Image 1 (cartoon, rainbow, N blue to C red):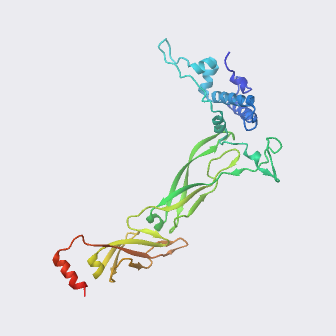
Image 2: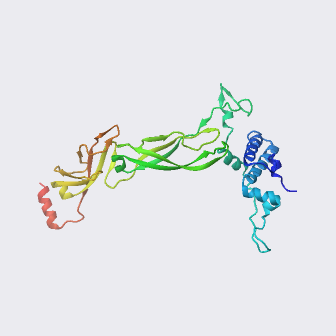
Length: 317
């Protein structure tokens, strides 16, 4: 005679889905190894209860089991007529009772609340403090939010899709669902700015969902890098122009073209500051930092004797 999953879960064959869930919840908590440390009999029953629920909670497995019993369920049954008909694939329990338990409760440890300190005493059992434990919040989930300098300069709206575990209406089981979080990026947000969505993490019957935190980071930019509220631009200039003066053209983040005259001699370490052309200040968006020009002096790779003579006569005493 095969395994009687209904008897294991203390059910009749007319049991409803709600009955199956109710009895699995009761029996899995009763025989859980954390509640019965060192009790091999309880551990074996915990595995049996988990396998029983794995079968009876699945309509297809249950239908095959009801009609053909354990042998038909595990060996497969014909799906067509005649000797050449196809057979269903036999069922094998994966053996991970804790996975069944975790998937049902939506977390690794629904007993956590029983171990919380209450009035200075630590509960070590599942009896007297049932339901009185304080739920603990999961640690924050941090994610990088990479923004272009244009997005931070103008401000924008970002839609972030997350997948999280949420409790089903029965209050016992959970499922994975997607959600869109909307972030309104303010002008001038600095790297490291944190945007927190309270309690948007995975739900469980005995935990407070974690906060989801997005942390602003700058994307690499072709023309600028940020230094606080200032923008840094590196201009490449020929040696001759570095000595005699030039005009640097820069396309700004808001698509304007600046023509910046450089009349000083550009030497290593020289910078030029253009006021009010930097990033907006997040608390005062109408106020901006500065644009700072750094210079990369381009030396010639070769000179003719005539040019060397001209330079020698021009620069040397």
